[in-house]
Image 1: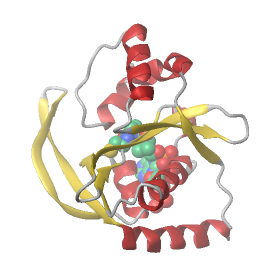
Image 2: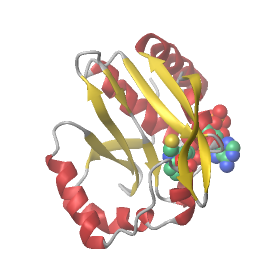
Image 3: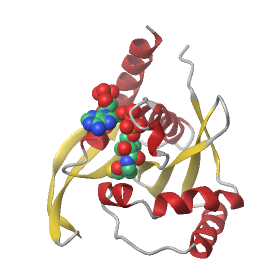
Length: 185
Ligand SMILES: CC(C)(COP(=O)(O)OP(=O)(O)OC[C@H]1O[C@@H](n2cnc3c(N)ncnc32)[C@H](O)[C@@H]1OP(=O)(O)O)[C@@H](O)C(=O)NCCC(=O)NCCS
């Protein structure tokens, strides 16, 4: 049985004190497709409060088991209950923790929840073409590339392509098994 070093939890109101710093980080903002905003601590606090009350999407904190430190968030959102599909974006805000495999663990945990507790059949993602860590992370979880959304994001004075990827439950099950076997060694 694979031992995970991270766990997922619901966000708490005071988490805005941690997440508002991630929101202001230029490097992180340049890796995601979303629009850049100046976000005050108060706006971030309100966003967290709205998120906690929102039953249509889950924004989950990613914490380290060793010290309970909040290092990122992973969401299950834009759920289409009829066709059983959704979007599961991830952000590791604590850059000191990048490259240690924590995002992979958290993504697998969130996907397992989405497929096995929410009954989703398919999950999709949209990644900026030059975000190599995110593309690798998607493919490790079993996502396959479906196409390019050309010039779909305007940021830093120019247009950027995004890669569209999706994942079916059966492909996730295979990727999860491979991941557990490889990381248990
Ligand atoms: C994308 C992100 C979640 C990756 O986090 P991470 O902690 O580096 O992820 P992991 O350590 O689990 O590594 C995932 C894969 O990316 C690879 N990777 C990590 N950093 C890399 C780098 N700088 N260059 C190339 N590959 C890298 C890892 O090797 C791993 O692939 P592998 O298992 O095939 O070797 C993190 O960089 C982040 O939150 N960035 C800002 C927000 C963002 O980009 N979110 C995704 C938007 S679509």
